Amino acid sequence: MFGSILVVCIGNICRSPVGEKLLKQYFPEKRIFSAGISAERSHLVGKGVDPTMQQVAISRGVDLSEHRSQQLTSELCKNVDLILVMEKGHIDLVRQISPESSGKVMLFGHWLDSNKDIPDPYRQSEDMFREVYALIEDAALRWKLKL
Image (cartoon, rainbow, N blue to C red; front, top):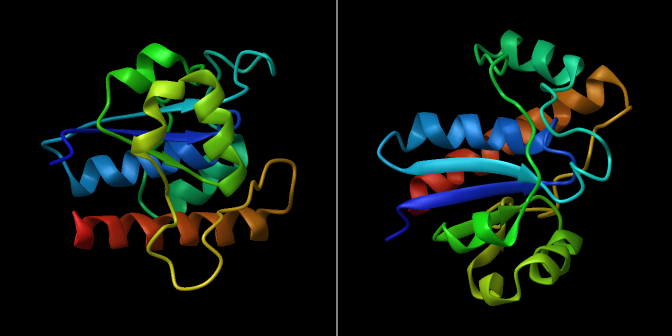
């Protein structure tokens, strides 16, 4: 049903790279990418994952060292079947970039029991990064069970 998935956050250096990597592990047959809504404006295009997120991921057996941030574009949106965003507010931002893609945007945390938003840990404590990683991990597993 969904042959390709795009995972989106703000800078593409904390949350969406984790979501991308975990979904790739769960769905090796699918094309899975990630991008940031403001990666270009924040001068993050081509940058690696936030060092704290990389440390947290490594502690969970996941290596994000090859990731490089990219800007979300309408072309990227058009070329995927499903777009998963980290926060409700991102839905409208994706629609502004790619209005024709609005019908395929959902929350990454859609299947989570509590708050469906996955907060941005950027410039916060390592504990916050760990909490966010665990939320993304839980949400990715739920997508695995639903797709």
